[in-house]
Length: 169
Length: 206
Image (cartoon, rainbow over all chains, first blue to last red; front, side):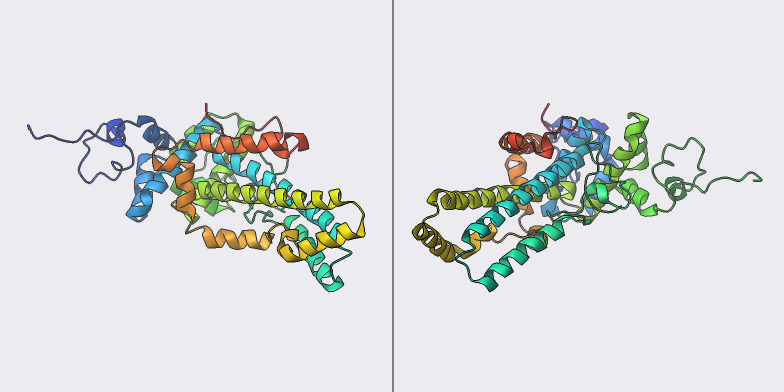
């Protein structure tokens, strides 16, 4: 067999198999990035990734592979929380900033209160109050996403060992 | 089969096998939550989850299972981006909030600097009437965030994910995310944000 063949992709190299022309992994796991596939394989498994990619339109597969690679890497660095830890941190940061913004807006309204007509001021105060009510004690945080640790099967233990959200579980 | 036995855990029920007393899944996949294991199995596979749990201390396993369940659920809802889509959107919200806060504080400082003179107050109020919605931080409410989520999830994710993954040339998103988080944490350190609690560290490059 003297015909030239492309070097195997990182997946086929890892799996020690022939990299065929229609290999589903080849476009997304180039041979110069062996760790990418190794990580994805360790966390998700080759067949799960293959099934997932087959269910996604071709133009979205690159993004899918990259997000899987990111999640796999995050899980290897933090086997307990993976990238969910980052989500919790970000949600708390969003909540903190939102509260600070609400407080600053409330201060602004107080300063501007003398000059704004009463019905308009009332509406602004109601909007602010409504946002505060939505943000506290609900399954969805003010960021609009469900708190991973307020899921029905998450018993509210956040990454720091305290409740990750105020939602009931 | 004379002895009474507990009903099999959701994992063993799904895998159609006998649930042994020492089953590694049983404490975390109760029989009344079949979907939890089904999702985790579909995304990660039973043997990968077993290996993962066996590498952890027993007191860490519940959190690990719950985070895996969350990831699996997100991946099934959004097969392309999964949890990473959530991260991208939260980062965007954070940037937006930072900008809104910066604007609001800047407006506030104008009032504070103007003093009590009636002339100053009237001038500032006239300025605010003109800008209108800035008083509410750019009009961003929780409803807007939710709407934003539904509106942009299918459309702008590609842009966000490409910027998160270095233009699609690599998958070093952990550096990107860490840079975002550390940049934010430095500015929030004085305020003692919850993100700065010592036990948890965000995903960061090795």
